[in-house]
Length: 230
Image (tube, rainbow, N blue to C red):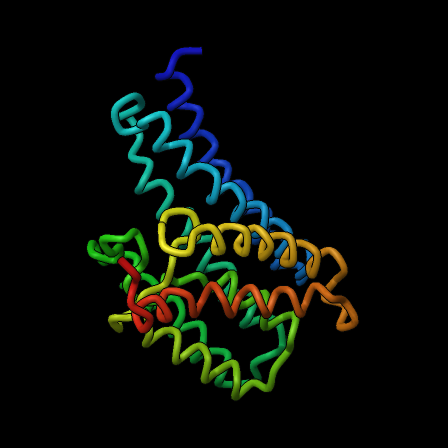
C-alpha cells in the first residue's frame, strides 16, 4: 500500500467518527444513555488514534483532497459538544429552566471556541477549556450531583474556555506526557466500564473516572503554576 493510500485511509478513519456520532445520537433519542456513551467512547478512541496517524503519514502532503483538521473539528463538535449537551438536557439531571440555560451555554460557547485560531499553545496544550463536554457529562451521569453543582460547573468551564488557562493534550503536550498518556488511556477504560455497567453506583469505575478526569482537567493549570525545571 502506497503512502498516499495510507494517508487517505487516515481520513476515512477520521470520518468514521461521524458514523459513531449518529449511532450515539440515535441511542440518545431513545434515552439509552449507556449505549450512547459507549459509542462516544469509541469515537473518542478514534479521535485519539487518527491524529498520530495523520502526522505519521503526512496527510496534508499525501492526501490533500480532504482537510483533515476541518473534518476532525466537525466531528469533534458533534461528539464532544452537541450530543453530550442533548443528553444532559434530556437526562432529568437539570430541572426546568436550568436545562435550557445549560444547553445554550454549552453549544454557543463551544461554537465560538472551536473557531478560535489560537486555541493551541506552543507546547501543544489548549488555551482555555477545550470543550470536552463528553468527558464532563459522562462524569455527571456517573456521579449525579445536585443540579446547582452541574449548573455552576458548566458556567465555570464555559468561562474557562476564554481564560488564559492551559489544558493538556494528553498525547501532544510533552511535559508530564509519561503520566498524562496512561491516565488518558485509563480514563477511556473507566468511561467504557462505567457505561457498560449502566452507571451502577457500586462500580469502582466511577471513582477511577472522577480521579482521572480531575487530573486531565487540572494538569495544564498546574503546569502553569509549577515552573519547569531546566
